[in-house]
Image 1: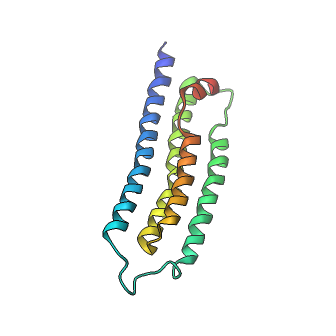
Image 2: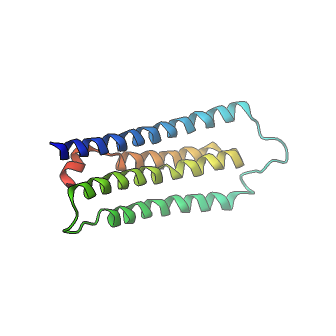
Image 3: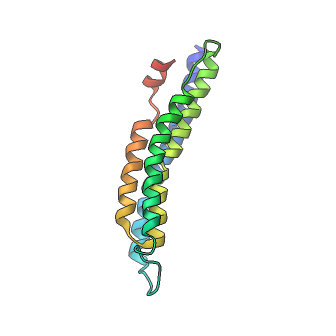
Length: 148
């Protein structure tokens, strides 16, 4: 029974982190809405044409992050025959938290693009990518139990 309690405790911690990251994505959307409604671009400010190359870099980094997540999860989920249940539970928790944190990256890139160039379309595209990643990698107790 203690092993099941350890699993649920680790899951609850990962769940709280996942919910916090999901909430932060919605807070980013509120910040963008507030930013766009209160601040208008000043003349001579950085325009989206001047940071077009940065847009491409951030989109490429977002695609790279998706690939990194797939590869990293494969590496972190490797097992050996000597791994105890506690080690496996720790691996599940660590992998879940890392995956959720990396899933937030595209939305942060979009937020930076809004602050620099004022174009919210980029933010909403990258926010959608982050939301999909968070949905895919959100911790699920059933999946954890099956993996163990």
